[in-house]
Every structure is written in C-alpha cells, then in structure tokens.
Length: 388
Image (cartoon, rainbow, N blue to C red; front, side, top):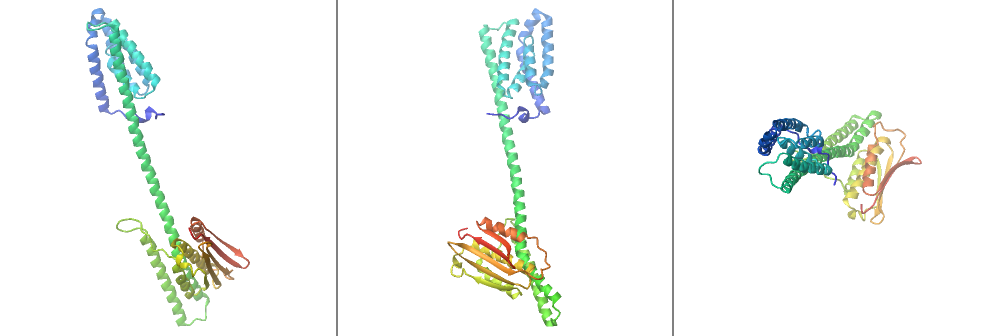
C-alpha cells in the first residue's frame, strides 16, 4: 500500500504543542536520570557534566526532528550512550520518526535504542539493575511500544488527511457540477429564447417589410398591419416572460418545466403562420397514427417545422413553403420543408444557431436533420425514429 508523503499530512506545531511535548520530555528525562546520575557522580564528575551537556544539546537538536528525522533521531540515540538526560528528547525523536512509517528507519532506530540502553546500563549500573537479559527485554519492550505508538499516530494522521482531502475534492467537484449546471441552464435558456422568439420576430419583420414596400395601402389597411405587428410584439414579450419565469420558481428556487408543445399543436401553429401572411402548404400524412406518436417525438417535429417556417419567412419572404410530415411506427417520422429560393433575401440577420440546436435535438433522439439546396429550392429534411 502506498502512503502519502509524511510532510503532507504532518500537522503544524502550535505553541501549545511545543509546550506539552517539552513537558513530557522533561518528565521522561527526570524519571530515567534520577537513579543513574548519583552513580555516575560517584564514578566521575565529568561523566555527569557530559551527561547534562549532551542532554541539553539533545533538547535543542530535537527541534529539528521534522526537517531531518532520521539524522536527529540517530544523533540523540547515540548521545544516550553516556547521557541519561537525553532520554526525553530521544523518546520524542523516535516517536516522531515512527510517524513517518518508513520501516527500515524504524528497524534501524529500534535496534540502536536497544543497544544503547543495554550499553548504558552496563556502563552506569544502578543498585536496582537486574541481569542483563532482563534489561534487554525491558528496553526492547519499551522501544517496540514507543515505535508502535508513533506508527499508529502517523497512520491516524494520514487517515485524517485523506478524509479531509477527499472532502475538499468532493466539495470542489460539487462546485464544478454546480457551475456546469448553471452553464447548461444558460444554454437551455438561450435555446428556448431562440425557439420562442425567432418565430414571432420574423412575423414582425415580415409585416414591417410589407409596410415599407407597399405604397398602395390605404389608412385602414396600414392600421390593420400595424395592429398585427403590435399584437405579435406583445406575444413575443409574453413568450419571453414565460421562458424566463418558468425556468425557476421565485419562492423555492427549484427548476420548473414550461408547458411543452406536442404534435397536436403543429396544425394550429401552421394556421397562425398562414394567417400572418406566409404561404404555407401543410400535408399531414400521420393523421391516422398521430394519436400514437410519443410526445417527445412530436415535440421535436414541432420544433423542426417551427424553425423551418421561421427561416422561410426570414430568408425567402413571399415564397410558398410546402410542409410534408409522414411516417409510421415501423418507418419512423419524416418531416420535409421545401421552399423556392427567394428572389429577395430577408433583412433579418440569422446566426444559423437554430438549425444547429435542432440538429442536436434530432441526434439526441437517434435521428438526423439536414438542410441543403436542391435545384432552385431550399429543403430542410429530418427523420426521427418512432421509438426514440
């Protein structure tokens, strides 16, 4: 099993952390040195001086245990050959090294601790010292316990770091998904606005163009055309409010679905466009099976026909548009819109995004959609499988 680098999951040391570690080191040094120091003083005063000096140096050196863990632990352990006061820093250095869980380092420092402890007991024997093998067992047991505790602390630190890292990653991924959802919703609003408004604006443009070019209209006819333009513009504004209003509930903030058109709404749409002045021939060959048509397919057919009529009014005003919808459950649904190329192009600009969006809709349903020039006509042809 691979572990993260110990430098990554080691927690930073606070003033309180330094304080209680120093206190523990002092207690350990006092408990271990209280018995051998009087014996060493009786043998040689310089032995005690060396013991205390090396102990003080170990207290300073242990501050660098995280920067050079193996080196610091080794030096302090070796100092324990003649210094019992270095035992406190030696314990902290060994436990700190064990938290890294590098097994060859644990083995090395463990054997070194056992050897140093046994050697010091032989150099400075205390009155309560037992046989050498008892000292060996005690030192070995204490060393294993300390290194095992350090390894447990390191494992727990890594576990906590891993859980925190996963939580932060999950939060970042959630933010990314939220941002993606916002992007998708913006794209959806753009598609809906195009589908809803392009048709209405094209009608306004068509009637406004008629007013601009017709000089034979009397006041009553001009008033009627202006009324149609006004009503269409009002309908466009109402449709826009509908699109922006139904996407999200103002109180709960939850997304809502707007009423979606179906195939049954196609005939009224054609009648409305025809009454607005566009020459449309509509041939519905699905009449006998239209009731069985799934709504999701009917919605796609509705969008294709609506976009085709909008493009015809925009790019070939004054021409006749022929719409044919046919198909069956076995063959799927085929929709074709054909109009002669206009002698006078409309003045309304188009970015071509409508057909791109409709092509994506058709492909998502497992079908296809293409628009191309055939002879002197523009043809928009799509096919949607019945079981989409």
